[in-house]
Image (cartoon, rainbow, N blue to C red):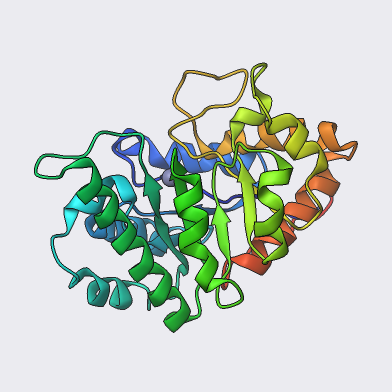
Length: 272
Ligand SMILES: [Zn+2]
């Protein structure tokens, strides 16, 4: 069987500063063969790339998170991001997207903040097309606007709608356009909403697994710091929901991740 992929894990978070080597070791012990680390702003992207340079199984996505859209004040970031995206360990752009849940930062009205996030999102999508990269998308209480912003790019790029918690019905038009969804540890929660049903029924090849570490630890670690090793708990739960073995689910989701993230290497483990 191949290793699992944690397709969204914030290893450059402050919360991993003290013990990153141990976190990575536990992930490898748990059967994680590759980790994709999205960035939240340009400085964070440089930290993510430094980790990816040191660790063969860590790959980077570079971008500006909608909640950090105020880290830039004009469009010059696009040139900086284009430069960062040339790094050989970059497998996607992101995370970008929209977040209408958190209050706007100082200096922004609610509508100006939404407009600014939408501008950054559109420029990320245009850059992704230019560079031939796929994108990692964040959504919080912004679903309709996010889907509308991506629609003009159908066929020109693929998007990972990360931490997807909706119904398969809601995902269908996106999956048909070649996009993917990914499931966090919420799939293991007793009150996981639509997640278990969506994870059970999503077509093979349409979804990936992720931790969103340090957030959203699966059962039995719910409420604690999440780490990439725990993607295995979500994988086991998803496999059982789908009536598959962990090995089958791993092979399927890892193949999906390889097809999505440019140049994602996942070592094939021997069966011993
Ligand atoms: Zn994230």
